[in-house]
Image 1 (cartoon, rainbow, N blue to C red):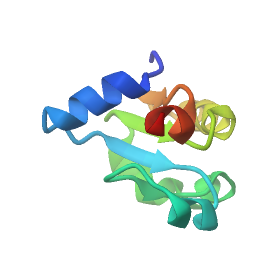
Image 2 (image 1 turned 180 degrees about the vertical axis):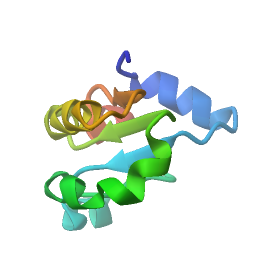
Image 3 (image 1 turned 45 degrees about the vertical axis):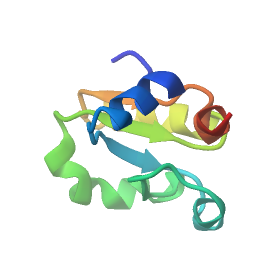
Length: 98
């Protein structure tokens, strides 16, 4: 699945769409700033949280971090685990807040 830009995500949110957004940063980073509606699942916890995400295997999931590196790894991992519609937020939260 193609990655998503900050502008596209913001437009969709303004239109009332609510894609599942997973912030893979650490909890202290999530506390400092967050995208509305995002849930915090740090990258290192994804393997143990797979069962919690099982219902989302075929739904759109937007993953993000600070700049896009960790979320790129999260997208690759989730895709390897059978998730079919994972999109990385290009530029991460830095791009979203710019």
